[in-house]
Length: 166
Length: 166
DNA sequence: AGCCAGTACATGATCCATCATTAATCGCAG
DNA sequence: CTGCGATTAATGATGGATCATGTACTGGCT
Image 1 (spheres, rainbow over the protein chains, first blue to last red):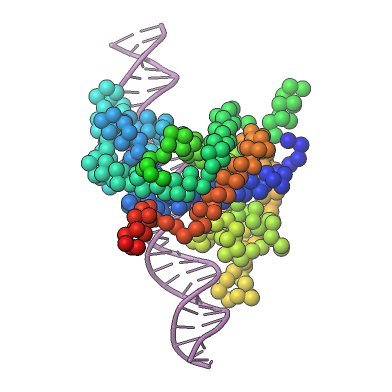
Image 2: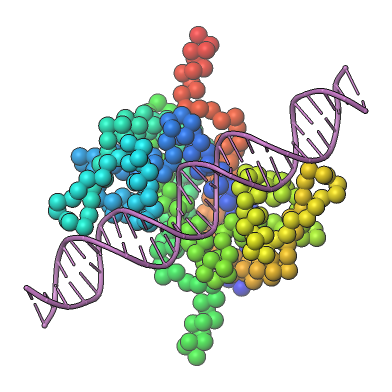
């Protein structure tokens, strides 16, 4: 931790990751938009609903699955409802809540989009990685997720901790 | 390639990556916003300018460096100019163009933000990865970038090619 | 029953990103 | 030097994401 900056290797890896992380979602978005008329967020919501029993979920379940903010989902659902992809339905079990349900058009859209999207992911990602690379890549992502789920330490915690303890 | 869907391993790796790729930028954004009052896009632009000779660049150079769309940068610069972080200056060498220049406030902001941002990146990413993991992670990202830079093949190209050839 | 903290969602404001369009200029072919 | 495609950049419109706030309901406690 001693040094302020990243090592050369780290810096190069970081910049490579940054570049990939900006290009890949953009490419996936473009592919979906052009081939299927769906945005990536729309696709992600539709996947969740299409995998659910009776093609419907409570909004908070979708949030949990996608790691989205509740507000983001709500706005997204409003737009998707306008587009006829989903439908909000009353939830009798819980008076506060609601169900989001896939419409026929929504089911059709996701059925058409999924194979092409998967083919794109395969072509851009998994066809390019060896099994070992894929495994390590996943490990690395998982390690980062673990770090993120720990109590968020603001920068400089070490000093703060020493000061508080001293 | 035969099958339409991803294998179990691939699917798990993909979902892990997706989760990481949504959580990590959000965490970096929050850290920058709270500790330094900067957004991640602002930070990225400031980094480019602070590394440039005379603290200024042509907008298209920033676009190239960040893989941004020209329009995105232009809007971003408008906001950053409003915030006093950068300054647009005339470019005598090319009558169409312009220079973006770091203001004193902008230089101060990036100098203050960089160490903390780096510490966060280190804490969330590189402290969690072994050298081997980091190296493979970089390889994987590079392989994906390579795939992205190749002529974008729409899904189903194989069939199309066969049909065209047949 | 009545209170109240917590949960589930929606909405408006604001900022960010992309698309389509416009405009000015450059550089070069004729 | 004139015309024209390519380059550089700004702008308005739209859709996306986040923050702050508001509302309605649940479930437990008294």
